[in-house]
Length: 109
Image (cartoon, rainbow, N blue to C red; front, side, top):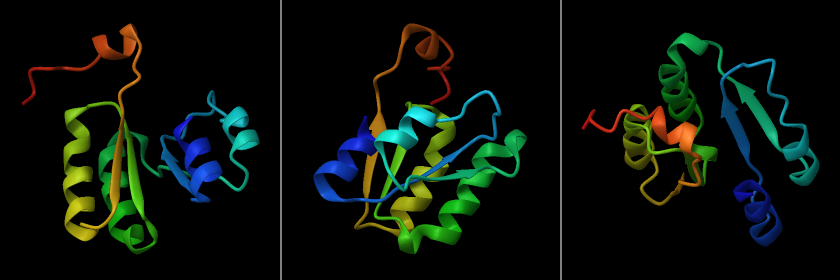
């Protein structure tokens, strides 16, 4: 929903950076967000490291960062982006379902 609204309301083109999972195709998202670019992590076992590398290499072209869920593992990605792009926006998806919320270790920090 957020990628659609950002494109429709503000004309913001986006790149989705995600794990390389052949069971997820994002076909519906591609239909409603024309031109959506999808970058797959080269290393699913070290996904956060891959995300940090992506931000480090691409922050100049990134007006914003969208994180899906309040996972503590995303904090380094958020910190790096805020250091490199203090003028950029950050959006945190919080529309989780019960199964998703049950997987979060709320005691990490």
